[in-house]
Length: 393
Image (cartoon, rainbow, N blue to C red):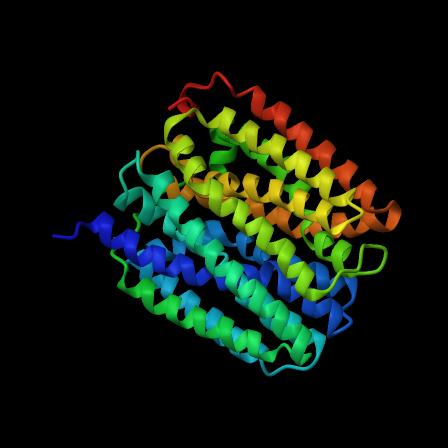
């Protein structure tokens, strides 16, 4: 007989594998298309890079709305993915950069609600000592699918000089993902009574350890996220190396492949070692990857920097998705995750604008220095929590 955990794992693995198409589309090709096909302004490119962050802003209230609906949380998630699919299908028909940006921001807002909703499913349906390993399979399969579609999308853009088919594919994937979520077992989350209108955000102040860790996440996230659109800019835009779409896809493949090869190890480490040393190791890898990427003057240098970033991301994705389960009291995982995602939204929205501002004032090496300083500052904050009992399990 299939257990609830096994059924959840199989359905979520299928959903996550499909999301590999969406991740590669939003993280790479959305900005690439804006640069090479639509001559987008820095404002549009920054908004596209910050689309998910805008969605994170509303995450604390999305969790509460889901609880108030008194329906399984996966049903609400499935409805949001349906909206994502419609927005992507609409994007396949547009020819102006403003409509392009509008529909993609809507799609990213709905997609970005998934982690905060599904943390309730993971904490309820998975055993505590299996969560990291189960989630690692999600990232492995998503990365494999992302590699395939990254190469295919890059080849298609180079050969056909059109981008509309990409959004038909992404819309279809979102539609299938929506149906999968409706089949996934879950309960409706409990309505948590809090005295503040800000819901789970109140725990940032009430729980000092949580607040301190979130400050470290904030600085680290600003340092890393500010480089994401600039990586594409460095490879494809003016003042960078100027490689082909297919070569950009190869760099992305190197990034994804290194994450695939290390995700299982990171998943096991997450379940077995204290969280703070785990997080510090990731910071060091991210620091090295940023410096190597933006000082590279060759294709091989870009590959090497991307490989280090991919190794770090293999663990960072697991840490970002599950770390509140190490810290939050039982039953408050979604509330803590909502607060975590809200602040992810703050840095995710600000970071692309910060990145372009630093690039305009300095250059790509200046971006690397600024990013590195922020990552180092966060590392020092995480070090102050090394002896925290709640994070030692």
